[in-house]
Length: 386
Image (cartoon, rainbow, N blue to C red; front, side, top):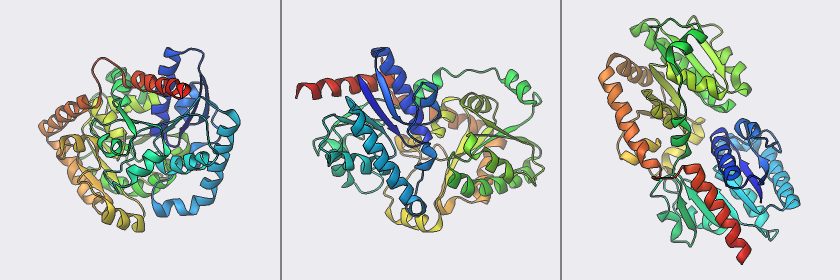
């Protein structure tokens, strides 16, 4: 079986890497080709290009990069058409993926398209679900109630569960050993800061997080900061603290990322999958996000949901504090962080409630990646019978 995978950002790269492992468990002879990042590369996939080139969010953030993104869409479509896979599996990144699949549909492709991670039509225009149904043959969802938006348009949907639940279950580090490895004292307070993996995210969030840390220190006292990031933005992150006397350690790699979580008292994190990872490892945290001013305005007028965080959406209340768009400011972020630091009982309550919500993001008796692999194999088999 020949599987072409397209994952346009780090969170999708992790999802796709779990799918690669599961497909190999089901069929050791499976072949892969496509677009991906670090985790997929570790599994032998040689990406067509660096996903940093297409990992852009926000309307006005995309515009300066539009010519390059369109070129990469054409390149990817040509590569898929030349290889003729048995199935195309696209992972998240709907902005890039929708244009890619639309281009392929014009070429009358002979293989099924399976999309992994439902576009958040429930947050934006629900009518976009019709476009999703028009472009893909099967949709794998991470949330249990997403299918209702798509099935009315005839699209077959399958809730597979969120792979972060299975991925984090295997993460286990000794906190004392990690502290020793990083040169931290046994009782030293550690704050984990996660500004994202895109250059644009780091540029917008890091100044806010830095001012937040300075405000926290003014009232809390001394602590150390660990910033897990990716090699592409490591230097940029370090430059933000070149003039600061706050002890900061910038680390890269997935292992160091999870080691950092193990020893952190709290975390300030970019909104996204990282919140689920932190919750799974029992780290009290808050999330933050903002676009540029114009995109912020558009999102505020177009958004249709109360929460950005998946755990909050599942609970229909705020478990993980959110500081997004115009609320993404150092003062409120610092106040929230101080509440978590000074009120351990509130921090423990957050962890307990978050883990309860995490339990809703998986099916009993089967790992999310194995369920996803079965669906991909079913899609190939069903297409072959047509």
